[in-house]
Image 1 (cartoon, helix red, strand yellow):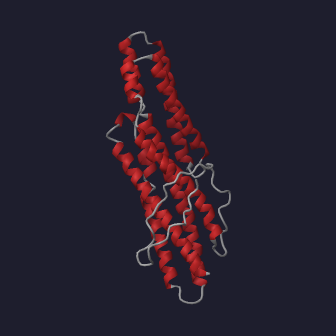
Image 2 (image 1 turned 120 degrees about the vertical axis):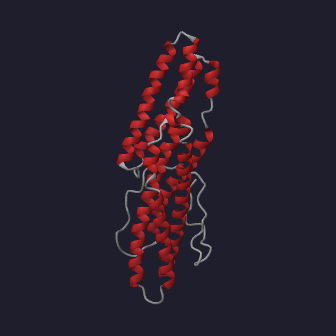
Image 3 (image 1 turned 90 degrees about the vertical axis):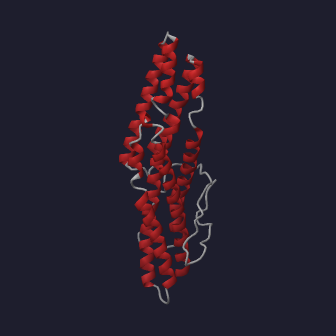
Length: 274
């Protein structure tokens, strides 16, 4: 389902944009529009359409981040208590598949910076390799105590579901938000030019543009540190480092709200300039 970012209305001109944010998932492709939009000329609804596609991708990843953090490790107790090779194999296979899915997405999201793409790919592949080696070790275990200890390592050494997957998605969401903010900033510059060329009273329009820039400034101040903070999280630091993950998620949700408000304000400026 696609989100119509511009659907909510601002409460009033004095209080700024609506704080409503998107909650619906987007199941479309991972690539962004090929065109960055015209660099000059009148700003129209079409200029916002491409940014909307980036925001829809952002909504899907944010919803999945919420789901990631709510899921937990699932079958951990079964692995530990049963201590059977079949159960361990199933647990490892599920984790490897989840990691490979994140690795594929890492390679396909164009808004992801190359630095973050390389760091995520390295960390994800390292866990895939580690789990593959652990699986072979478990299949060779002949001692029940050793088998139980190795099965426990599926969780303690990797924290795939509670840490690795959410942090990888968080890095992606952060870069998507920053890409959207950058495009909105360029649009705001064009709107400023249009306001300067407009005839008549533009005080309300200038106020809307100022609020729009304020929303974007909040995103560009809060979001950039998030990827480095998340990439630094290690399984050995869990659960104490979960607080960092949760704070990042909240900041990303706030950033999404600010981007939604910026979209509303941009549309209002476009209407006022007609």
